Length: 166
Image 1 (cartoon, rainbow, N blue to C red):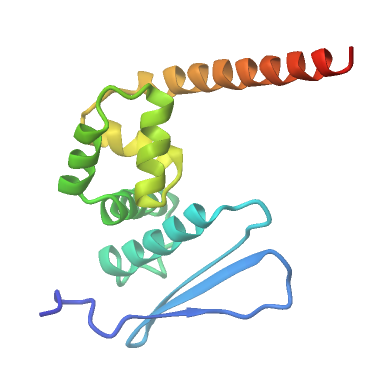
Image 2: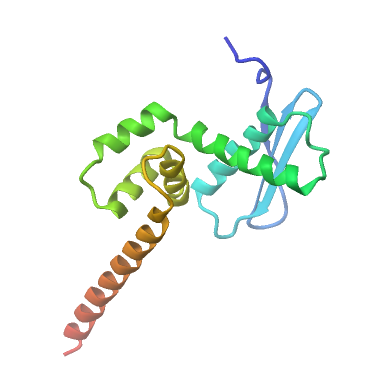
């Protein structure tokens, strides 16, 4: 049984002569939702999230593709982002994977969950906050931990390089 309003949705990827251009079009009856952006540096996770985001627009805002009021557009963008997060990381499975990963360092936890759900670290952090499993402080904590890990790795590699040149 298909939920009302989503039967017959088709996703079409649009061929383009432009390099590094990712585009898709959702079609449902006469309604459509287009997504296109330059993705030279975009990951597969970003592409997956973008598709889920556009699906969110199609399901949550089926008649609003003509809206031009910025306030409404911003609200709809937030709703589509939330939809994508919940769609790609369902509550029960997300909570289960978080529970199974307890004891991991924050960076390891986030990247472990990121790999399971094929989403970005930002999507994981946002989802943790939305589910009230943490608060906004996780952003600065995560970034500080990442900086520290990158610096340690750099110093380790640099010291090995220097030792090898002697």
